[in-house]
Amino acid sequence: MGRPTRVAAASLALLMSWVAEAGVPEILLVIRDHLFFPSTLEIPAGVKVRIVIDNQDSTPEEFESYPLNREKVISGNSRTVVFIGPLPPGEYPFFGEFYPKTAQGKVVVR
Amino acid sequence: MFLDSVLLILQEILEAALLLSVLLAVNLQLGAQVSEARQLGGLWYAAAICCGILGAAAFAWAMPTITGWFNDVGQEVTNAGMHFVIIACLYVHCRLLRKKADSERMRSLGAGLTLITVIALAITREGSEIFLYLRGISGGPSGVTSAVLGAGVACGIGVSTGILLYFGLLSLSRRAALRVGLALLSLFAGNMAAQAVQLLIQADWIPYSAPLWDTSGILQEYTITGQLLYALVGYEATPSLIQVSSYLGAMLLIASTPLFRQHWWSGKISA
Image 1: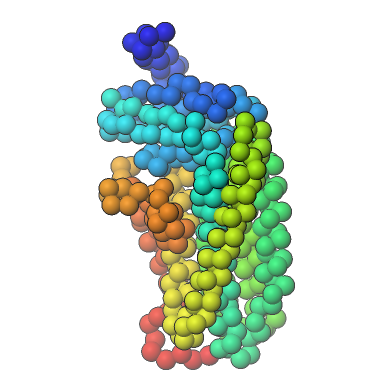
Image 2 (image 1 turned 45 degrees about the horizontal axis):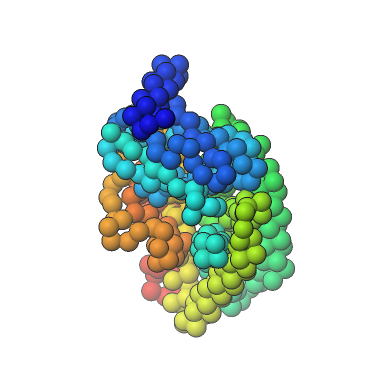
């Protein structure tokens, strides 16, 4: 998938879950082989978002972001939720604290 | 991998080590000062540390279950709860250290129990992340040995920093030591409160509010200085209004105790 397709797919998924959740849009972030998929999450400005983090590795990972002020352990083979926003436009990097070299990503708020 | 481990584990250990050394120094100075009050024995501290390590292992083990509580925000709520209990116990501990109770034994027992709770919970909270980290890297592709080595080095640095602070406080005059020690305890309480509020914001139990200021241009949180300041005074580059106010609130709570007032606001020290 090219980047525009990916962005379009992500936006569509976001929009659909938004409708389903009646208010709080939801976005999926997968951890696999100590990497984040997708590594860039695009969210609209001024909206609270529920990030569902699905850790598909068998080992725990810690989602951490200094600019977002977020820190949460996700056990191996399990999923959990982190709320972010509403945020002003900008880029907010995050990383997996247990594998900071590989597990890198960012939230892009537009 | 080595440096990552050192930094991550140091960050966890520092907070508990600094709190423990300040509590030790304050209690020792007060014990020496108030003749009738028996000093809290070393056994209390040993018991607290053991409880903390066991608690950390149990908390890490139960993390998958705990995370699922309260619609997937159990981790935040439990951690925030632990912080609030630590603040409450610090407050009661400070009160009991000063109060002239009818029953000296009850007073010692109360002070001991609150002390155990504060230290054990602080170690549980920070230690569980170390257990989780070690488990996280144990299944990793490489660098397990260097990570474990890094953990050892971090333990060494963290504990040494605590010991340094302890002897630093003891090298001051008793009055200065108590003043600095109590001020640090109130800062710890503020730090705990701000962290707890931050966790509740993350859990969406408290509404998000924009940062009050942004000092990340001056000092980033992930630098060594940032981490040290975080452990000592709860430094955060982008705190929200509710975090700042809960920080000040918890500080004032400790500062309102007679023990604190006696050492900070009255000229003379009386037993």
